[in-house]
Image 1 (cartoon, rainbow, N blue to C red):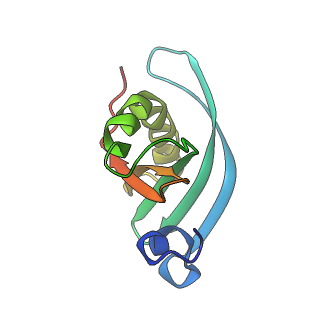
Image 2 (image 1 turned 90 degrees about the vertical axis):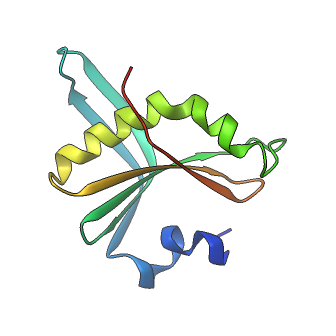
Length: 112
């Protein structure tokens, strides 16, 4: 997976400035609730930050990945909201990476 050309933006060190694994995110949301989570991979490049959540889902085909990824929209929205506080003004992209089919799906997360 690390050498897959389709996933180079996530794992090829020449394609980003810095990357972190298992980044804890904790912040207070607009309603005063504490939001916590762990971002599997965070990739910073220029004015863009990628928030990546890994999912195994060995039975998910590449064709089904988009529909399955949608179920994680709220989770990724919370992660993206927290990360956007770290780098205000940067674009935050939320991605679900299905490791078994090696399929990455970008979400447009919205908080519920």
